[in-house]
Length: 106
Image (cartoon, rainbow, N blue to C red):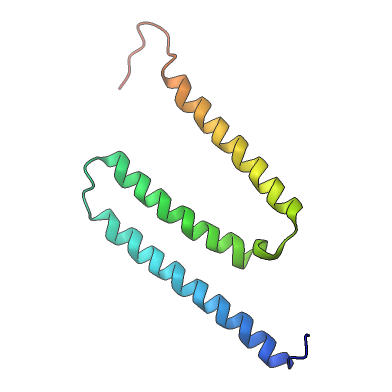
């Protein structure tokens, strides 16, 4: 293990996991704090919460799911998935503008 004793190797990983855990707790506190701030509209509040959630999700995916040390193929699959997810969300939003005549919208 690169010349390190076993306990030093685990101590390094535990320390990293604790830093990520503290960052996730901090992100949760920021999310709760941001929910009390009126940003002007409900959409902006949701966008801020989703932005913070994306940061927290990336921490979980990178460190707890060990994707930060994976090969390029994993990143390719993740980019491919994100591309199609964004495309499907775009098509969903785009379909709202293409409703039939005399449709009642709430």
